[in-house]
Length: 199
Ligand code: ATP
Image 1 (cartoon, rainbow, N blue to C red):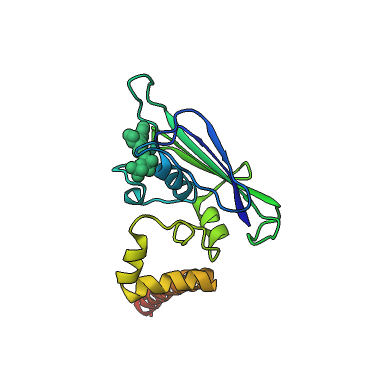
Image 2 (image 1 turned 90 degrees about the horizontal axis):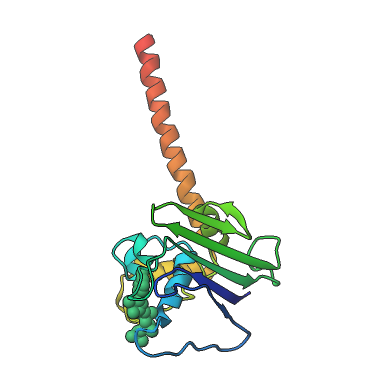
């Protein structure tokens, strides 16, 4: 699996639609300070479902929408699409190519699409669990992140190893099952209370 392309429109400094095509091997994005290099990495984080606006260097989620310049009016929505080559079927989906799209309107309304079909954020998250690509993954190493990992708590480091070992999805499923069990136990206590009142 590898990243084939990113298409950005209205996201941060990219007012016009722009498409980056990547090929096998090393690709570097170069440019002067403030030209938008980090915004490309932010776009990838965002389309993969990042919800923490601080990780995207903003104050509110709608800050990612192009806010205008002296010569250009602000835009009403941001859209980012990434296409991954999935010919090795590392992603558990029956397509050779996978395109994930995220759109956000100034009204706050947002859409996620998987190969053009509307889907939930949960579907995107689940697709990328244990691949290292998802929003909790390690495929994007930001400035200062290595330091943070080395000096962070052991539990935080553990999360990274869990993702690399491919056990995150099982941990999430266990967590969801335990929560369900907890709520069933609470229901059972209620039923017992009602029964004892009736007796
Ligand atoms: P450096 O090399 O200094 O790290 P960079 O090339 O990584 O810079 P970015 O941080 O990606 O640059 O881009 C910063 C630019 O993006 C700034 O000029 C900022 O005004 C612009 N920008 C950020 N958000 C928006 C937005 N919502 N609308 C318009 N422009 C934006």
